[in-house]
Length: 193
View 1 (cartoon, one colour):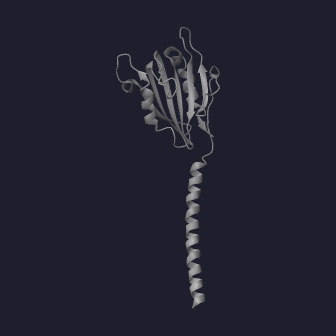
View 2 (tube, rainbow, N blue to C red; view 1 turned 120 degrees about the vertical axis):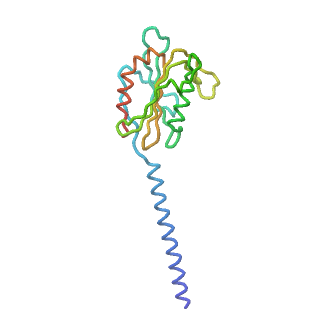
View 3 (cartoon, rainbow, N blue to C red; view 1 turned 30 degrees about the vertical axis):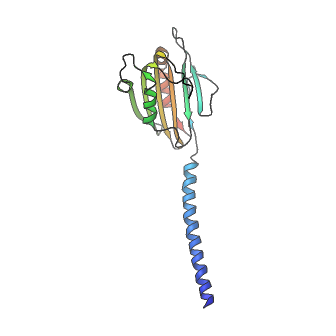
């Protein structure tokens, strides 16, 4: 009788362990698959964009776009990546960017913006294009803001298996107008490899 109890108890413990281990293995496997999305966003930058050293670990790439005659500032394009599941939704980022562009008559930037969602090389890309006075904070938390009239911003949120990348192109309107075709070509080059 004791042998049967010990055998029965051992079978219960073994069954419990196997069940727990099996479910733990499945959960771990799913978690690892999500955490180990491999690859990066790749792109081809136009030859006249000047690559700059990134100024923070959240910046994947940073470019200076040469100003056109008559403009005081160069354009700037920055690609950000904050990590999988970080950085907010496409809509939240587009709203934040639109709030950085005041309209001369005080109207709504959202009403004047051109927004689009498209698929590029299998990636969902939400874009926004808006002109106005650029009022973004000069550095996060600085409390000092730009005040750049006649600026234009083109921005995009690129959804990848590894999480979203955020692209922000901003500068004097004439300089950014001059970059319309190169920026479109740049967006078409985006791939996740």
